[in-house]
Length: 452
Image (tube, rainbow, N blue to C red; front, side, top):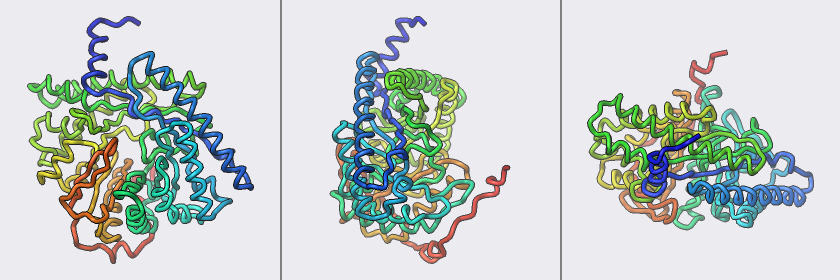
């Protein structure tokens, strides 16, 4: 295959000027065969497995970065949902010890995060899963690299409200025990969680996967914004085609990197996740893309249609480029990590209600939103339940990463720094659905689940 000078320049420009990168190279690792009746041997097996694979992942990433000049920003490992491997060791202190073991292994291997400290509870909860939820405030506040998840529903099983009702209190406790409430940033609750998601905090190695698989998350909002800025005159069809062709190029480069890394690791290549993911870097904003479309400020009426157009074009371009599209493959619209989203909240253009409407078309959900630290538990549970219901009814993945900002009120800023950036605390509706949520049970699956 030969490349023109223009193509080489275009790719170099995407990397150097428009923040194109491989956002995440996530190695999924099976831990089920590490289980042992002797808990110390079990921990030793897990530690050695993570360090072995983690160090190999780092070496492969560095080799590919040098060869192609494409930054691989985060190197991560996702493991078998921890509640499954802890079924014969259901003890709160043992859950904490396992979290510390995984955290230490990540540090020793120089891995950014280990995902998978979670459970699949879409229809009910085992003793192990309840214990994991109970331990999460200490796990998330006492470790630095552990990411946790719960899958509490699916379009087939409905939504497990009993599990949702445990989360407001758990998140409050996690926030109170963490510096600046940051522990909550490493927990996400899903419905229809994919087993091959490379993005944290929701990554885990699903039971349908093999012993190991490499999943790649690419990101290029800066690239998409650049091409849209150069095509201001076309109608919506032209705009969609322009984005689709750009995402095609981004996806092809992501698959090239992923397959090369998988070959170096001698494991199977999993998927490319084509999600657009913001960073705190200037110009690397999904909100910025929406505003370049012609929306004065994200959150204005018309924003949902604009995001729908963007998502449709991204999915079509990615699907045309690769047969291995998977994970979330949506658009992250975090209120932190995206300068345009932060600005929209601060100027009053965007609130939780409009953000929830946007998630109906974005495939990801309410990501990195902060609410006042004195928000009652049941209101947090209601926010989570509302968002996840969108995923249940529309047969799509949605998730929530919500942070009770201890000691702060609406309008104040919660500063995280680094990758997580800063997040304005958002006003919540003070009226209650406590009695409704207190009914518990499961939201029945929609009739679309009856397809067999």
